[in-house]
Image (cartoon, rainbow, N blue to C red; front, side, top):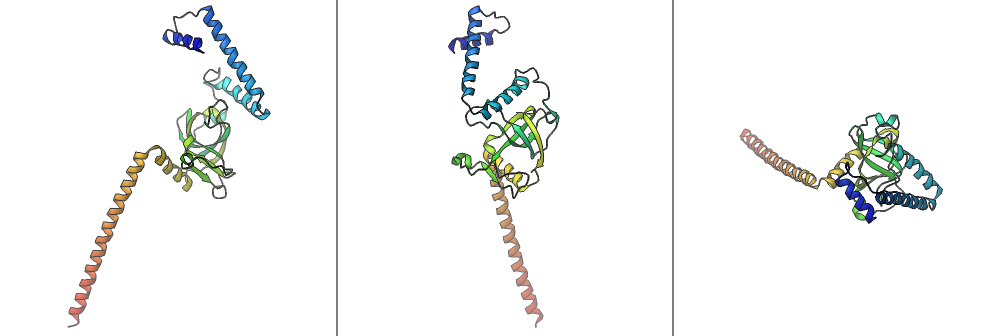
Amino acid sequence: MLPLTDIKGKLEQNCEKLNLSLNDNFIINNELDRTINNSNEILKNLPLLDIINFISWNDVWNKYGIYGSKKQEQRNNFSSKSYSRGRLLLIDYGHHNIGLEFSYEHIGVVLKDFGNLILVLPVTSDRGKRYPSKIENTIIRVKSEEYNQFDNDSILLLHQITSIGKNRIIKDLFQNISRTELFKKVEEKLIQIYSPYVNKLNKDKVKEFEKLIKNQEDEIEKLRRQIRELQLQISEASSF
């Protein structure tokens, strides 16, 4: 890869004026063949369903990805619509991801619509899997019997929120959770995870208000005692 890295450096420094040598072109073509052959070997050893899914996604990427001829076009009717907060969509998160990055077709909850991009909260089926504590503390488990917007028990993966192009949208599920206690819990947890300073500020304000309320309650109780004492004095005075 070192020769290829050197060529990349040359191109980045003087892309418009540089004429690559025959050797540089030979290296690039060789490396392209190598990486394509490596991909083919990897795919041949995968289960057939994985191969089919990869082919389907790769065709989409070839057309609508950053190098695709249709990258400025809308893939389907869902790509042109606006989506409100809490909307549930079926999304293809891709098959070219790395490590534990979220992949494949799953539901996403819309957090914000930015025009051609939307910020989504990925959702996966809950099959009882336990996560490491650092992740377990960031997820929300949802029972479908409590929230019928979900067909199955699900997990909201708050550690995997991501922005996606609308060409990744497969289907609008015509469900929304924005007016539910669940979505309120999502927003509170997002602040807790991603804005610890704001979270602490909110907690401090709550404590401040609780203290203020307690002081007011004490003052009210004090006034009530004074009223009772005055009423007693009036009652005693009227008895003479």
